Length: 551
Image (cartoon, rainbow, N blue to C red; front, side, top):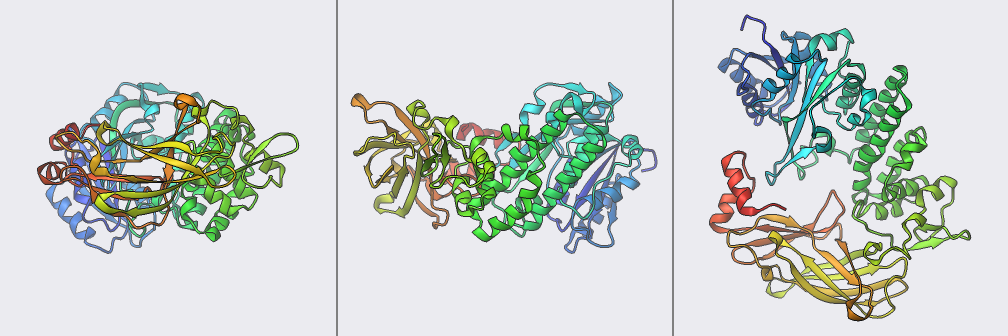
């Protein structure tokens, strides 16, 4: 290639010989053809150098850079490629992801229609285990618009990706805008700076990036964002947050922008780690608290005021050094799960847990009074349903022992009728059970669920469902109902049972989320082969989704 290309697409890679050809193929297949493809190899030790050389030999638009030593992150390979880019516009792609065919065409057209520093588009998230496609931060891409500075729309800080944007290279060079090196979460700082420094940028509604997510990848192969079990990962996230704070302060952005950045950290960054706490050892939780709490002290009261109450409870328990309680509170985040018990002080304020807070900050964080646990409509009462035993019973049954906590004493001190519901393919299967009093505000019961009793459509069903438990208030005629999730033991061994027809059903704890009980239907025979363990893109995937139905 001799003429100057319109766009340089930088594909960064490290030890990813298997997926690199797919990423490069997605760039070569762009509808806009006048592009340069730079493979920036972060000193791979597998077959990546050979694969990269083969790709370059196949297409003269492809050239390869190789770092002399591994940098351990994404910043250095991007920066090296950026310095050599020949085109006036620039994009970044990770080797495990793809660009949709019209990505370059759409983003270039946005630049052609206005004087922009960058253009950005929507992102498709694809689960590698199921093939399910979902939008990333969909609420930010509902309408096309041109934003003239971050002050106009600070909520865009929730979208920190660098890969769904096409930058004017002159803009990056003019501001010396480069990725931090030797630090993970480099996208967050780079993107915050780009949002703040840009005179104007356009947001498109069309997808321009395909982001592959492997939720069950092994720890040693997981992406950086899925290595949250490492304290070094926590440190990097906080370091980047501090760098963003320093940059915003130097730019003298309005308080509304800084509050939105604090809100984003609390409701997204911190929330990711909070959801993991049930799966961490208490010692790890203590190390995590030591890293994150000093940073939280500098965040705005307004941002804390916008937190969900269940998330703020976890922060309060960390602040009070109640690490076991923090792990307990983190289970069921966002699912309406209550505490096992509450305590009320002399002022009539109700707090999470069995002991009153010891500090003023703890009282503010752990105060549940606003939820009106004792007086809210029964349908919104906060119960806590924990499965204490999961077993593979006879006839393909799943045997469950359930303990229900009623912290506000909403249930009568008598046997309580309940029902377990699960709905594969929209076909509800209901099993009755009885919860008997087992202490103050505690009830226990058992139930046998046979997935084979679920009625499935003729074309079969592949999907994941989480059973729920419905209790009633005991009034004559059935009374009001309340439905809540079932929290599974964190460490039981998954097992399979028979489903209807030739289906198999995997019974397992949800993991990496609320720890709910999870049932995974897997069809056998012809339908199972069609749906496959991973549903592919294109006509086959669309046909399979039509067969499987939507959730």
